[in-house]
Length: 173
Image 1 (cartoon, rainbow, N blue to C red):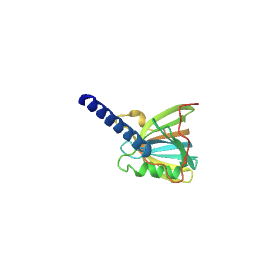
Image 2 (cartoon, rainbow, N blue to C red; image 1 turned 135 degrees about the horizontal axis):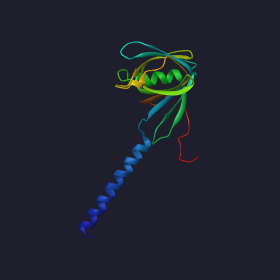
Image 3 (cartoon, helix red, strand yellow; image 1 turned 180 degrees about the vertical axis):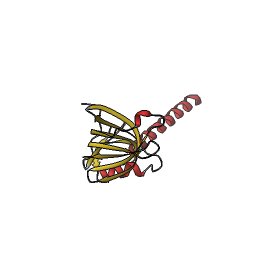
Image 4 (cartoon, helix red, strand yellow; image 1 turned 90 degrees about the vertical axis):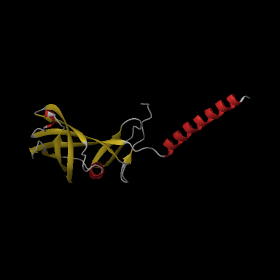
């Protein structure tokens, strides 16, 4: 065997070992995934505060809400709404998460993209401060709406001790 062949074999084995070590490390210590939180409610009221912000109140919120991750993990779960709100908003006190609110206004479906902050849960009612995204005239929430669905984006958190985690999606139906 020539010295060039030995070097080629050595480099190939080293590259393979680095690849395998990286794969094993990712398998043992998964990176946290961003989660999306889903909150439903019966109705919503919104009142102006200042600077385009609104105070929104969502009633008829269930005690448990859903969350899921995006690719590549495809994990979903259910957790108490209170625990999820605490996790989602505690991590970024100065950078509130983006959210969408889908609702019926006068029987017609509408959606707004906003940021939410200052959540206060009281039984089955949640109050938030809503801020439209910069230069977005569609971020203003109507005074009242029904059939509320809120999706709150991306807080890199691990599931809480009381969460119910469903089996990761394996690509089959």
